[in-house]
Image 1: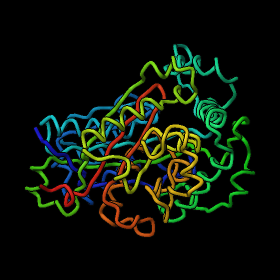
Image 2 (image 1 turned 90 degrees about the vertical axis):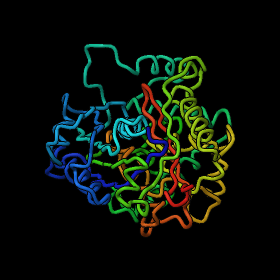
Image 3 (image 1 turned 30 degrees about the horizontal axis):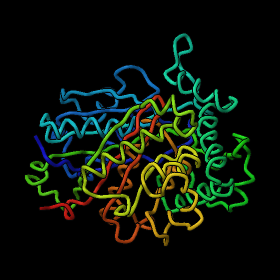
Image 4 (image 1 turned 45 degrees about the vertical axis):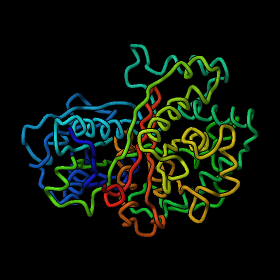
Amino acid sequence: MSSRTYVIGVGMTKFEKPESRNWDYPDMAREAGTAALEDAGIPYESVEAAAVGYCYGESTSGQRAVYELGLTGIPVTNVNNNCSTGSTALYTARNLIKGGLADCALALGFEKMNKGSLGATFVDREQPTGRHFAALAELYEFSFPPAAYMFGAAGAEHMERYGSKPEHYAWIGWKNHKHSVNNPYAQFQKEFTLEEIRDAPVVYEPLPLTKLQCSPTSDGSGAAVLASERFVEEHDLADRAVEIVAQHMVTDTPASFESHSAIGVVGAEMTRKAADQVYAEAGLGPDDVDVCELHDCFSANELITYEGLGFAAEGEGHKLVEEEATTYGGKGPVVNPSGGLISKGHPLGATGLAQCSELTWQLRGTADKRQVTGAEVALQHNIGIGGAAVVGLYRHASATAS
């Protein structure tokens, strides 16, 4: 068994608007996977297992994607965990190494999405989010699109309970679009004014939540090569290795359905529990985090996640916004330097691996104009309704060497 696990190579495609580029998921996977292998400086033949995440695709699409990199007969596990699929692939690959089943594993994620808002693929059976929507419908009237309804209702509840205002959520949209200007992989690289964020078309009225505070549907892929401590030492990779010091996944608890809270329905307790487990294992806390990539599928989720990750006390996430604490020059951590899901894009199977890529670059000090000065500790948060929250804490190998 390996007591330590490392990211030794990362890669991703530019995230694109669906149907704007003539490519298929094998093309995406080849581009991201090849980049990750080249970043690690190892051949595909060194990879002993792969975990591949996607939500929209046929069974064994993971194999078809990996076959673009080689045909070595390794075990390939297909992963689907809604919006947390990419980080679940990462979690799966890491556990193979941590459990001693491999010294080098690949986590790959991709998505080729349809235009427009997310919808159900199979309408002749129970939807996995049925209990979530039923619990939420007792609190807020349903509206379309469903995902905006879920997270918009959570923001509306936060305003009612704790006094946050629409301008707090608009600022988060403004911040993330501003961050993405310096990210060549982002679907959007345009800065907007706060007025433009607020005046964009409204997709959930009670907040109001506007289009520029929502993540778009996207095509794209991300990849990470993970390795054991032995593999890193044998291949002299410590200079580029970033340790995943702790990582935990939490699924729904009774709070999702019994708390009579929209914030509970969208997984606040999952996030809080996973973060607490990560901090306990790592021996670090939220005050130690310098940079964070979190799941801002909507601006409302970024604000409530500030609280779930411990960056703010319960009910005080909007105070970080008022202080402009989560952008460059603030008291930190810098949140979503990549532009986040709101501006970088959100191809479901790739999102968690794009987060991993960004944090790896940040801890190596190679994030170019996005670089967070002095970044030493990074936190990742990726959540999927249905549900699963994955939280991980990263440090560069040089900072964790004993």
